[in-house]
Length: 483
Image 1 (spheres, one colour):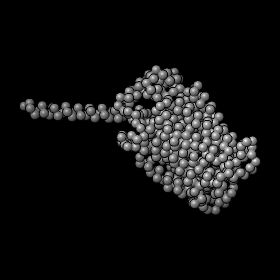
Image 2: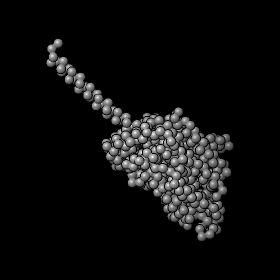
Image 3: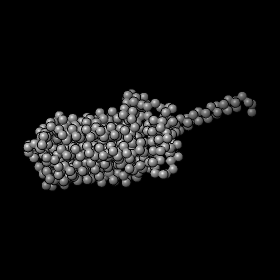
Image 4: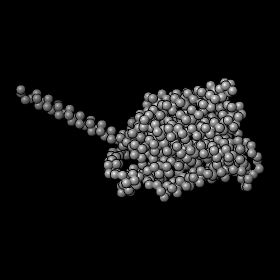
């Protein structure tokens, strides 16, 4: 089970790499600071202004949006494992195209293709890991995706320090293509299909074999019986829902839970993590009045902090709960945004450490709540018949806000300057209020519990009606028979 979860979570590593890869080599690529002499047949750099660079970063997000929406259909047509293989092919193609780019359009197109693969794999990996996990291990397994994502961001920052030259920057886009190809091989030869998905495809014998392989010799009779009962209930009573069914509120409970998923996925981006990862070197260099070395050091500390924070989330998941981690995370990002605004608008000799502390606290608290929880929440809130459509909407929300924030940031930074993060103070406060009022706690909940609880409610209602009818009959009977 852990091996299969780790192989699926390699998708997170690739997404994290492609999120963070533009950060370090930006000046080498866009301003040609390492020279313009061509290396082989490829140009040494791709000159562009800050805003065009922002649009190429946004191309990744737009691709992610379309990939996540497409995942609703591909998760219906194909198995979870096949979806991850298809996403891997997009990641390989996009990485190669960007690494071999001869102009800005070719580079941006490669980023868009990588985005499609990232959107597909983000939704499919989260569903797959949830479906193969036990109730007790789902929280820990769910952090694997974010852990690998943060490792990808950290390693791309480290590699970026050494490969940000005119002759080597293209390797930064080629390395994840190799990793995606390796993941595809591991998926094909070593990973089993989701038993829950096999049951949905009526391949019951294969589902039992897959479940036994995942549980490594443990008794699976009760778990498989529950899985079959859940599938039978869904097959008999609930046809698969589409995105339009959810948007048109065909089932009020499903639509409301999908809205919660959409908002939480949005807060994976709109809380301000994009500028702290993609633009951190440029932003912090500006704050530190041209001290590039300090800006790089803080960016590396942030990347390392996210890995540590993910481990903290893994330890605290069952003690604090999904909702508790989200609340702590949003308080942390809100207060640390305040610290960065205060520190960057004052005397840097005195308040410079405040900026550093704010940046590190921001990424640390973001990771164990807003970074981890949105990716695991959809399978815990949505029933099987609405999971593909609901996950696609949630993932689509994530990517569209990724595009909005990362594309708007250069304009925000130019217009608001050192006050830029005041926007995220307000956004994170609103998020805290929403989570406090509306997010349910799902820690320890079975994936079938929402179905079972509804079934129990229906049965209880029927039993109460029968009792009421029996009492009425006795009352009438008692009125006819003389005392």
